[in-house]
Length: 360
Image 1 (cartoon, helix red, strand yellow):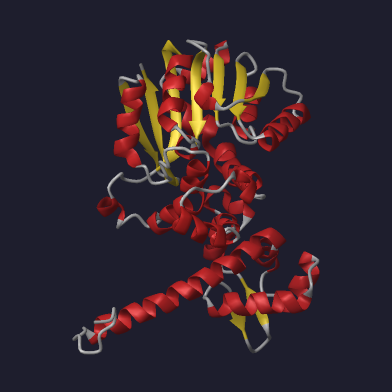
Image 2 (image 1 turned 180 degrees about the vertical axis):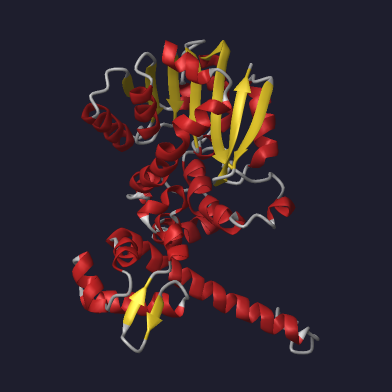
């Protein structure tokens, strides 16, 4: 018997509905690529500002090639993203759509997030090889990764870090203004540290990351802001040896990527002072697959995991925790690392992350 047996009775309605769904997925994937291009070229912002405009007018406004712009507009028109008036041959971006697609949308700009689709597609054949042979990929396979992560995180950091996230920890704002020692683990391009260092000049900040490219970006931004209370060190945070050195340690979407996250959390616990705080921002999900079925971002999270977070961990000989490690496992690992009190918070404007406030 073959996998598809013509003698097997099927539910015709279910068969056709699933076929329609697969066609929809194909179209959605292609639309995601066009959205990524729209973000990178500034077309969404130009279209939102122009109002009804011809393809020639939009191309002129954005400084782009008209023929490509016209094809892009056609694709997004049939996808229901852009509206077209055939009587005057003009295109427009509804304001309701612009609030998800333009720079002014801030953290809600999903066109920016669509850039991860072509990034991941670029390693597809390498991931296929990993399925067959095991192992994993290195960060070198993702040349735009740090730039995209930096762009993606900046909107959240700029919009919410000082005014929304810091107040999650009782008394933290006052402590930072008085002056404390702060470390960010897996700091990436360092924007979060630099924002905090500018807001709280009496405190001292250090960021740790094992990427030379990321540390270079972090130091460059700190210099451009003339910050004297922020520094960045090249470091594998699993080997962090400080003991009770920091009043506050942060990790922003970094722990699940680590080769050995349990070791990293234990190192963080050692480095946190007895009365200190560990603030971990990480992916909002359940550790149980069945609980994630209704999570609207779950297919994307498992894809990001398969094609990046999981494989870079395995590529380092790591544990392969994955993006969707989930709240239950995260809480358990935090307790095992030495944090007796773990509180999980959610922010209404951030559907992607949970906010863990941890004390010994």
